[in-house]
Length: 282
Ligand code: AMP
Image (cartoon, rainbow, N blue to C red):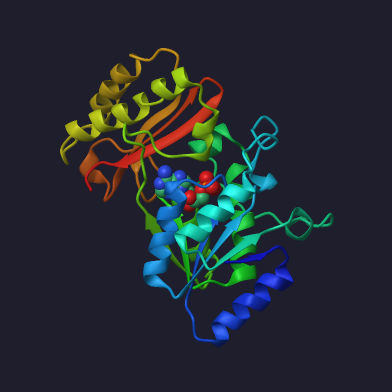
């Protein structure tokens, strides 16, 4: 696997791939890789003849109270996992190139980016759209792979690609879970053993709602059922539990009024903020 640290190096490599007629799949990550990330590499390898992964802990998407400083950065272990997963190249973007001191561009989706996660983390999605636009412009891949685990991010980034006419196809991967249902996340490493146990309540809440869902079901009773489940773990601090239209992220009243109703949860377990979601009628 090639490891590139500069824009010039990665563009030389990808230019060579394109000249050789390869199709290029791209999996952006912040590292601390786990099977959720690796599943996206597997998808990309099935569709493309070359797969590039980026690892970049993007400062622009972290707020002042977020965990930027202690986000895990186990680069050696990540490289070993990428080699084993069959990635063809790793791009380690550098702050000095991504955000030179005179950079000032902002790319914002004022509506989609300011609800739900965006309401709790102001500026987060503006940081995500900015870095992904930069990475797509640098790499010019054929296909961008994103995980449904970060559901709002998939909606925001698909909109970004559409509105900017970015010449890339977007494909989504299913959420990969631990045996007890907890969605895999680099942030799970922050959980103490007790918190790790408590964290399973998020998935139990979502599956309780999914099991009761049918096209005629009203949202409010479903959410009430979910809150009853969450009450079993009073230490888990709910940020939001909502059922929305999976395309617009707007609240709905009855499930069948949305083409793709999705239940989204965000909650704090100890100091760790966890996200999860399930599509209800899929
Ligand atoms: P991150 O490193 O957290 O920025 O995630 C990089 C990519 O991996 C994003 O597209 C995530 O949605 C995706 N991802 C993270 N966790 C999972 C998971 N458990 N299952 C599937 N995809 C995931």
